[in-house]
Length: 133
Image (cartoon, rainbow, N blue to C red):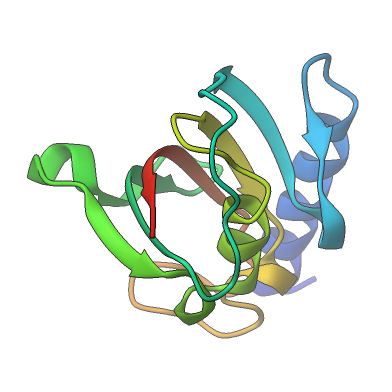
């Protein structure tokens, strides 16, 4: 078995085991999440929304590939310009929600490497949603 196939299986197994844990909830397309803190319940995110949030992205190894908290400035995004799994999570969130989201590779960067993110990577994002515009 190639290293790529081993990595793919490791990521798939990680999500399978995670889905059995207490407190883990599921969204469409295999996206999983857990609530760190519930927000106010205000606002509805759509694909055309512009959101402001803090986030930290990491791999199942714990390696962080992006962290807005570390930069000290929240980021603003148009939701429909993000990877599919991030869109799925944001469209389920409300203002003030703070979640940890687990995105399968099919809803992330897929079968291709993207910078420091290997092909077949499960992406783990901690997201705190501040505003919806």
